[in-house]
Length: 92
Image (cartoon, rainbow, N blue to C red; front, side, top):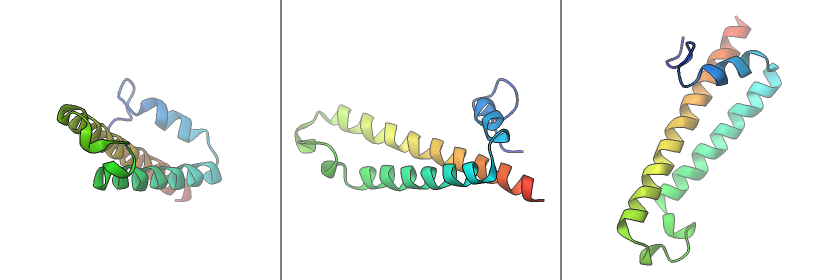
């Protein structure tokens, strides 16, 4: 079982929601997570393309955004892995 899905842990609610979704809904969620991962990875690689006047922003602001986007990528990857786990478990 993936980390964080036991009662009271951070992904418990997400896990419960996935249990009540159809396979098609779960597959669409995985596609959505993949798109979010790709978009946030592009933002990290080239923040100036997404934030106007990036080079003029305070370095603390820049680092804060990069850190937030990195955390969001990690979260999307975790949720995608959880969705994949539920989908594979159903297909067994």
